[in-house]
Amino acid sequence: MRKTALVKLTGDLAELRPDVLAWLRPLAQEYFIVICTGGGARINQRFKEENIPYIFGKLGREIGSFKGRQIARDELESNQALIQDQLALEKISATVIIPVLDIGSVLCHVNGDTFIQTAYLGYDKLFVLTLESRKTVKLEQFAGFNKVEVVGFPDVYPL
Image (cartoon, rainbow, N blue to C red; front, side):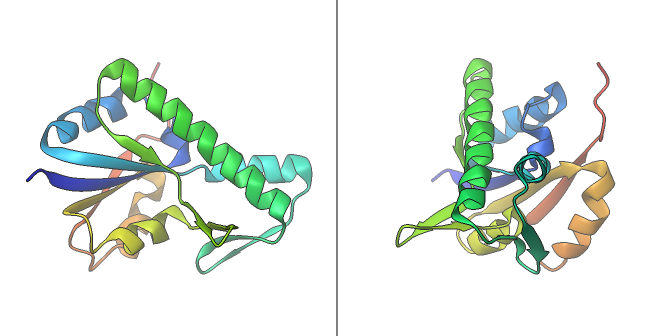
């Protein structure tokens, strides 16, 4: 039976750079991969543009309005489509999901890092792909979660 891996990809890496693709390619040979995309920076930007209030609490971004939850979902779905297209072009096999649950027709956004913890018991290996500047915080956050590996990528990729 093929091993399973969940990859939480920060939205800042959603436009899959060559270094991220090079990291994913061998992983897809060894594991059935599910990629959960983030979108925090783009969501925050849209909220600022549309004057949508939110609070960043213990479990992530708390969005009070249905309109705000829809905007956040739309941004995540945009990242999802972008990643799916890039993976198809590169012939890398992976399923791409967003961290939004529809529970009784209520949109429930789940912080991507919390999503990793939620899925922890079901996957053989879990990866958090983040920017190098955030790696230390993520390592502290996932200390004690032995199946989680935090991978940092340069904040700026050389052209």
